[in-house]
Image (cartoon, rainbow, N blue to C red; front, side, top):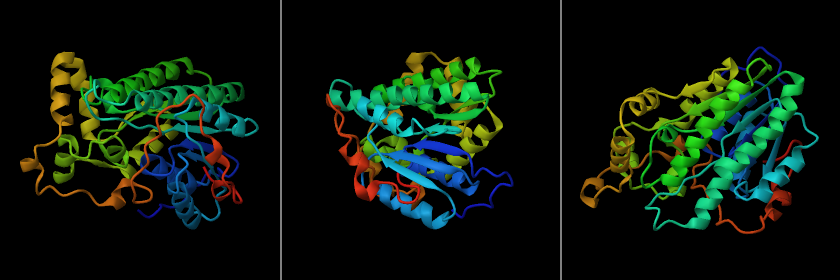
Amino acid sequence: MAATPAAATDNSSRTALITGASSGIGFELARLFARDGYRLVLAALPTDQIQEAEGRLRQEFPQVQIDFFAVDLSYREGAEYLKQLLRDRRIDVLVNDAGFGEHGKFVDTDLDKELAMINLNIAALVSLTKLAVQQMVPRGEGRILQVGSVAGFVPNPLLAVYGASKAFVNSFAEAIHNELDGTGVTMTLLCPPATETNFFAVANMEHTREVQEGRAKGGLRSAADVAKDGYEGLMAGTARVLSGPQAKMQPFLASILPDSVLASQTRKRMEDMPPAEDQGLKGSDPSKTGGPARKAAAPAPAKTKAPVEGTKAPALKKAGAAKK
């Protein structure tokens, strides 16, 4: 997707912090901020994917200062380490995009992976939001974008912990938006529907009806479209952005149907398609996932101590406005 012309406002002194910025929605949001001249501080899982993302951003926006930090925010220590790196930096915009899911029956899924998911989707988001608001409110200005999900409006059998984590994000964002009224700081909740990103591979749900039928029928939203909707809503100070018609339908259905019915409907979409039905359905073009066309690595199971050694590896470090 070609970048559109830069905005007239000079944002060269403003810094946007974006997590999960090496692919998907986070990467596309980074492109939009770079297009409009923001300095970027980008964070993502320490894999070689961030090197590819950084290379693409530097090539497309050579005039933009980019600091890319490789850090695993699914560990509590990872979030604290990132906050230490940022303690002397002014953050004008925070985008909490990092997150992952895990598909399967709760009785069978990996508890360590689910606890890591909770650390990333909830604890890291809250921690970085606290850092941002405590900077922004005394200044009387700032913007925060929380990437929630339409999954947060309904029960999600076979994606139970992820759905519950996004219900937290949705509720948290709406509440803090209200608290920030009159402070000059805005908080926007972005709720994407099923979107063509690396999420499905990491969550082990490539063969679900949601994904296969979505791809076959063109029903999956592109990362670029979701990012555009979120960016525009953020800049307008909108409380909630529902990206696309499917996303707009979900809160409405949640308001009129009982949870038992919603859970039953959601489970059907989350179940794997029988091989006979799956056969012949083609996957999507990897280039539509946003960012480098490769699978995202799932965070390692949570441990007692976070492996932040990859965070400062020379190849991932600042290079004239370095890496995530």
